[in-house]
Amino acid sequence: TGVGIGNIGGVALALIMGGPGAIFWMWIIALIGMATSFVESVLAQVFKEKHWDGAFRGGPAYYMSKGLGWKIPGIIFALIAIVASGLAVPMVQINTVASTFEANHGISPMSTMIFIILLLAPVILGGIKSVARASEYLAPIMASVYILITIIVIVANPVEAWQSLVWIIKSAFGLDPVVGGITGGLFVALVNGARRGLFSNEAGLGTTPHAAGSATVAHPAQQGFIQAFGVFIDTIIVCTATALLILIGGLYEPGMAPDLAGSLTAQSVTAEFGDWMALPMSLIVFIFGYTSAYGAYSYGQSALDHLTRNKYVSFTFRVIAVVVAGLGAIVKLPVAWALSDFLLGLGALINLVALLFLVKWVRVVLKDWNEVHKPGSDFSFKVEKYPELAKKVEKDIWV
Image (cartoon, rainbow, N blue to C red; front, side, top):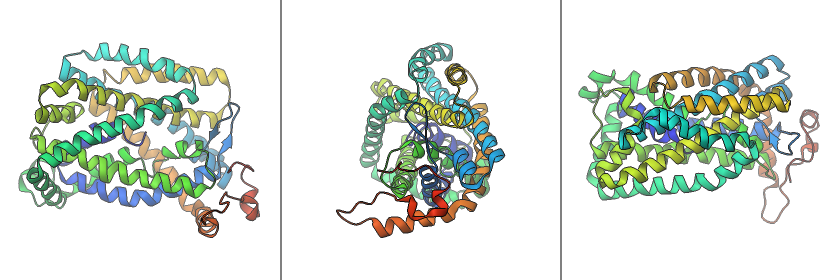
């Protein structure tokens, strides 16, 4: 779900709750998060398993139980991931879609809820492979079109873009008296920037390792580099572009109601281009929310598969996931974000402790990559070279 609603509604909420300075702290979190994402993604690859449907599964619950023998923490994390990624996060994604539809077109949240359920059901009930196929087609399109829009706005308004960057830096350190007096200054900017930055790029939360563990690569380090670069693109590039888009649009005001975050980005685009952009922007937000929702669900599904491979339990979870995602359209935005923040934060705490104990295997993988990665060579990971690690993982899964 790399680029998604966190880049639209999340950035808008960061601006409203923490002021422009929150964006600066999102940058700092991203730079730290690149290393964290590399570590957790490599571990997800190393300790992944092949399941009954032929697909790989990996993630914190897997590397906790297989790498450390932490059965109970692994189970606890899996339960958190099922609720947080599989249920709470999709609610946030769909909430932003509903807010945008209502603000731009007067469509009731109830109508959006029914619409979303009808569209999500075939994809989620179709199984995790259908999720991968759908996101493969939609994700690059939604990201490319959205980034193009932000580039056009920034290039067309160079003076305002520069002023917005200055505003971000000044507010980050409490140097803007207006914003500081309303939102709370440096501390509030830092806290909200960290929250929204982590939600957007997901580094350290233990969510993206589920995606990393499902990938087929020749060497675990490859997936680590891919995920780390994704954090940079997600936050430093896309989230910054969104922040500049909103600040240039002129609709942002310190002290705005948090409920307005869901539609602020889309309305900023229409303010810049005209009302004719309301429909295209709503479509972009919908695609972001839709793909992000079923992408997050797949993380929850991966965690459930760690606990049980019972097909009936899995199907029941899918039905619940579809209904709960739809309910996201009618809940209050701050409630949805607060629930997601709490659950993801709890999971992150467990995950980060596990990373500290398992980082030695990441050093082994990185050293191996530096030794074997040469032009024209077979750089697939030969885990049998490391007997202690080989006892903990499946064989012949890197080709």
